[in-house]
Image (cartoon, rainbow over all chains, first blue to last red; front, side):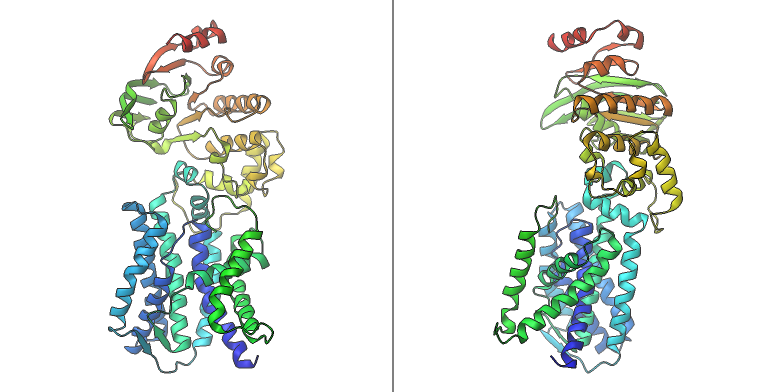
Length: 278
Length: 239
């Protein structure tokens, strides 16, 4: 592999690292199987692309993308809390509806090309550090403990006065905000936004999450957040090596199959986990 | 302190509580017995606010529906504690009961010292295991932890819902003695539901028998002294 490829691996690792932290928030912390992910990822990309096209400064476009994802996550939480829709279906519905919304944001065309943007790598690295620190700090706070407590034991959380509906809403808003932020960075580093770009985001995120947990298996939630980014970079490395190996003679279209196998393999060998979706 | 007036609850078309009245004075320790399905757990769900009654009024400390002042120990210690949390994390969660959740780091020395002191009163060496997972404790230890947790925050009414039902005889005696010690030390109002006739007679004050959705018999603390477990079992059989 040449230097350019290494840079791309690191870049993609970081972009999907932020996404993985979002998935960690919903699947692990809240124990909520949130399928909004694929839609929120594209939403973030569309908002950022639209923002940059209309001359917004990049940080502002990123913040808008984060907020957009937050609203999507909040909507999923509301469907679950107030319309009594199961967590999986609520997320699927929101992601489904986001498709139309995303097309609207992109002005009715399925893909948008942006001009080359300078300084994205630095912004991405900075954002990565801020996100890891902020989410780590949050999870180590009283509020974070309540979030985790709610995910672990709803009965107890209720009995100890944790407001379930609001806490889930905040958790999912944050989770999808991060996923959308990842989507925004994906578009800004690729200079390209596609309506179908979100397919499989969840699975890639889960694979990264599992790899990260294997490498850094500590209980501390702050370490677990860092492990998401590490897992994501390692996932990209593994994919990079697999595609370069002459022995395996793989094509990039084989990726989905291999990623799926990886997840099944890890989950099958890990043994029993109580009341966890993953 | 705790006042229930004319409480009725129906679950799945079945009337579980039917015009139930209850008055408990501050600091009183009331024991409730009743066969399975007579509504003990439903009553506790009503008092803790998780099940709004179809009819009736609840007042805690003269204030209607003041459920924040009610704390509860569950039958299953796996429900009363978070298995994946350390003892310390469990206690922080419990001590924040009904408080606004803040963005300050949850671990600090002051809390550790305070929890260590509280755990030391158990005499189970748990004070030196603050960073062990709750799931690594035995059933009795875990129930003792959930007892301590339930009285960490502010409260006026403590509900003990068959807290020894899931434990072996030895742990069961240990947890019951501990509960009794905590109730007398705290001096708060306490309601205990139990299927253990010895516990019903040997601990607490007034004894109430729940049947067909209301209190069917009641014994004051001194009347209770004259009863034997056999007498109590008879009240169950003669329905």
